Image (cartoon, rainbow, N blue to C red; front, side):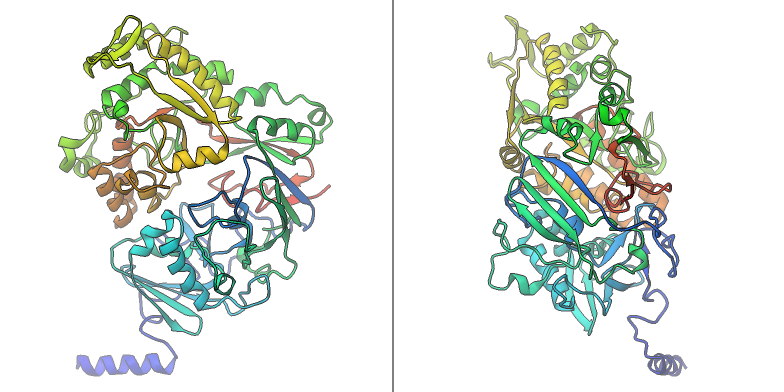
Length: 604
């Protein structure tokens, strides 16, 4: 009987041109995919919710960037490439809706199909997809891009590639990836892989940095002009194949996007004041209040816009490199955090008291809760109890100063922690039992005036402990080289985190980043608990399990005391010329990827 029913089912599939991979329940080709549940937008959506489909086309925007570039290949570890190549020239199979935690919709791909347990994913290309030179985007381009990025590209692409057990073309416009590892996020990660033109790289070394070739992509813009280290210009392609897709309505409105590079980051604001650039992101609350009274603002030619968001705080502060013996002891790191006179520095730098970053995912449903770990969070942490930092299970909160400049209470507590770790003040200098001074370097990028001011105040606090660090400012190229190889003791660190953390967490603090260059694990986290919790995040069967795993990870990272955290703001401060406009409806993520300049337009 079962055999007869199965034969009837096969006849039905054949009659309607369906296959086992595309037609049965759980394996239906769809217009989009969400990390959990169904994507919010229906198949017939008109545009992204934060785009204005009626936005006019035309105009230009000029950004100011610190540093320079010597490469047009942003997909390798070597060289410095403009991020605009990835943002404007090259496309992915699917695009992200930044008004949802993590949902993708078809871009180069017209549909996505997954196995019942996401053990494989299949993408079907749109027949009309074209590169800017008019040639079609093919499955050969897709497969070559995945393999090349996974084997020769930046380390951030390698993790997902290693999880692909098989890659095969399943139709004229379809490709399937079968996984060798359980990971619910992988179909979405692969949907966001850049698709490059295979023919452009024939006979070339993909891993070699340089400005040749100028990349040919399928995106809405082409590189029209550039001078390494000085500027790059992207012009909107009038023949862009995807301009009428619902996903793109109201996007890519500007005819020209230009990036001008300045060797010293301190001159960026002056360039904006002088009208040389169109927009400036202000990171200082104090400057936002006190430095925007110049003539262009008074005349209404420059507008101040506050863009709210609902994303986690992420982490921003001074990171300690635990690969170096000086910062290997958690008590030393706690002492360094305690010596950072947050309340005083916050007021001195910002003029107002901004809220402190309490944990990596704070200000969101994913952040650790105060007090002892409970419920599912505790269950996830208990197997690692012997190796967890103090406070992970019991509860932890950042030390607080008394608000005074001298911060006597904090200094006394820091001295006690140093003593427990084997360091005491001898003849006015913090030394260990062997008489060696507690000496280290704080590395900064040249022109980083705000963080330089924070470090200056911190150094004054450290002097009260008999600690006299060296502060070194270097250019962008040197800074990238040293941070890529973890050649620093302490430096400024910032990691923006989303409402749907996933595979990128391995790049941020997975144990493979301890020795592998080019990851974002600058602090040198090597924790079995962290690795296991990232696995839990990737394979969580429900939103509740996902949140518990992320909260547990947040506890381990925060109590690891790797970063001296600064403050955060739940708005972005954007000053811009009055001709630049954005939609009233703002995305969940606010001023983030996909917002500026993607949905802005120029209009007098």
